Length: 113
Length: 113
Image (cartoon, rainbow over all chains, first blue to last red; front, side, top):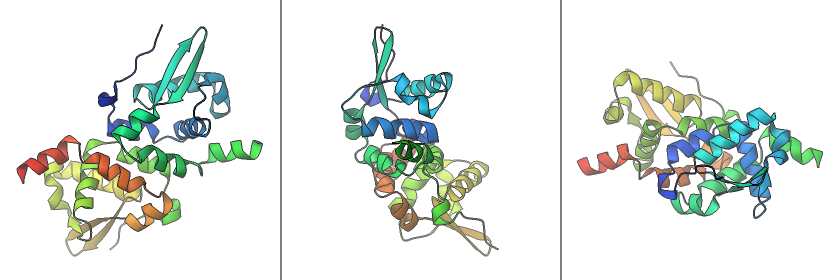
């Protein structure tokens, strides 16, 4: 089973920005960026919200083309679509990740260790 | 008379992204960027929507701290808050402006001259 993802040329700037215009989704993207190269499972985002809320936020990120979700048995592995985003919108993802370091959810995570 | 604007440190990344997640507002920002240094009046955005719609979009941009609106007699002069945005979110505005060049409303404007 695989989940639907937009192709690279279907990724819309307005939609990417609209979906990232949310503290929880920014925190998820910041966390993914900090762990780049490692696919994260949903459970690793539980600091950012309830399971139901997370499912919603992760679907929004996937549908906008910001993340890739791979279904592996009973778990879902999530990673940033850095290649697609960097080629479509050069510099955008990095500037957002840098700016997102200040947002409260990620700040709290830093304090926790 | 002057309109309310957030101070630089009140500008929120999530809010800036949410407000820019809209084709019309991206087109307005792209147009302001192309004419940087010149304050634009509302009337210059009429290609992007009706007067009522524009008032709404311009208010959203101002309230998010993306634009500065100066009231001068009966007209309103709008400019990008580049200094504030660049210092708060380095590289963000430029990457969005570059990516926004492809959006339909600005494309149409290019064809028109």
